Image 1 (tube, rainbow, N blue to C red):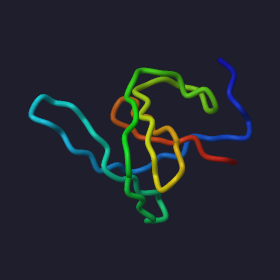
Image 2: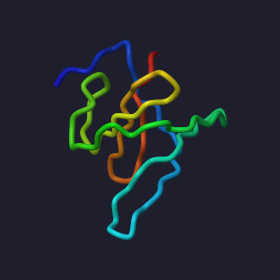
Image 3: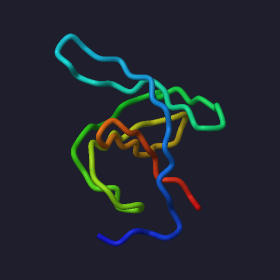
Length: 84
């Protein structure tokens, strides 16, 4: 799968809530500059490829404010697809 050179992996910190059944739900994301965004809605969780930056993992379709985006978890590391 080809990567889009206009995008890069942006690693973020993620606060999660874990249910008694082990289901992980991201609550917020924090960028390396310290800015934190609350996740207003979790729309979907599935195994998928990061088509813009390459790689695979669990893809969370999230809504922050009015913007829908993807948040990926791959072997304990979390990232979003950010513009270069």
